[in-house]
Image 1 (cartoon, rainbow, N blue to C red):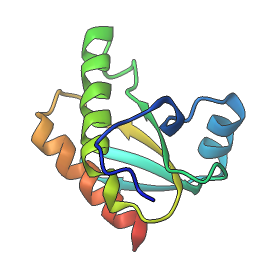
Image 2 (image 1 turned 135 degrees about the vertical axis):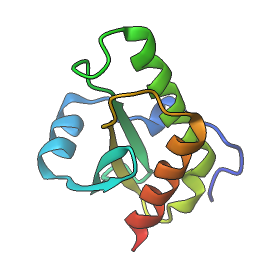
Image 3 (image 1 turned 90 degrees about the vertical axis):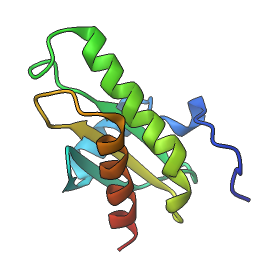
Image 4 (image 1 turned 90 degrees about the horizontal axis):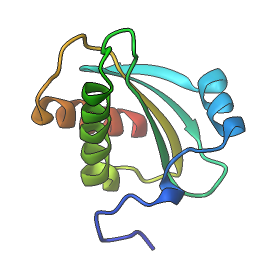
Length: 116
């Protein structure tokens, strides 16, 4: 039964080094707006995410953390678009801060593109 609340628990995040390595190595990469994302069927039975903002593009941790929060929030609000358990790695590719609306649009198109 899907969770009707918009939450993002610890279990919905890819944390294990082996799972991260598997996702980076074996994932299928796509792009959507300001995001590049890797997708792989989840062995855990639920959809999980991992968010990365390169230090090369944003030297200050404050900006990297802000972007990661925005991407996680956009995913949290739109995760109902996923129907199959999937591990997703989101990589922010722009060199400037984008507003939440544009990030959410990119996340939404990424989640819709996964099902296609």
